[in-house]
Length: 234
Ligand code: IPE
Ligand code: MG
Image (tube, rainbow, N blue to C red; front, side, top):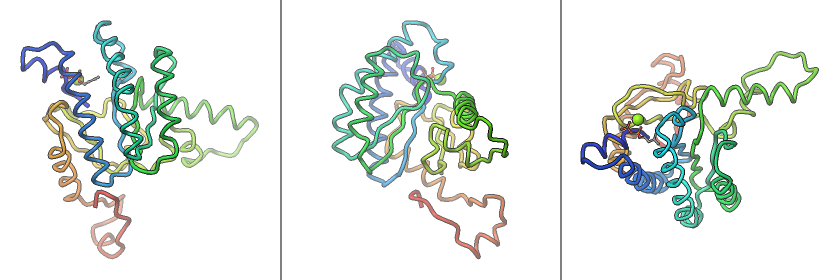
């Protein structure tokens, strides 16, 4: 979710105003995904590198996270959304951590959209925490580890790999998001700034996805013969 600051700057508003509108875009996008039957939506809200921002902006982002949880979780639950957060929560305020835990517990039994917020998250951090946990659990085990072994320890190891990656705000980078899981994901970049992202923008991204041919290393001819698994995005 990129472009909040520029959205505000274009309007001669403080960056904060862009982040506030960004929360509204999150609400709309979650609702739009739910209605379209998307199985899982993972939002990159705060990267491990974002701590480098000015202290007042970081603290405002934390406040927004707290208030969004206080205001939205009940509605998410009513809409059958399963909410969770991935990332290193050890640096977060105890209030925020307890709100996150409560929201996860409340919605754990829901079987609608799996909404994951990546907070203080980095793709390399994810791989390293997985490797370290795997190493601890495999003391004395000399058999070579497989990709599937590692998968169990990755933050999103229980979900299918993402079909579509969307980055708003014009940059064409992954910026240390889900590095392992994005290996075969279709990448979509749009100049739309995150506060302007809405159901129409989502539909454009999905339309672009549908025009692509996912070969997973095979040839077009093979694909025509074996109709490989199609996802909720069609
Ligand atoms: C993304 O918008 C929001 C967060 C990283 C929390 P930015 O704040 O990066 O917006 P720009 O890139 O300055 O426009
Ligand atoms: Mg940015």
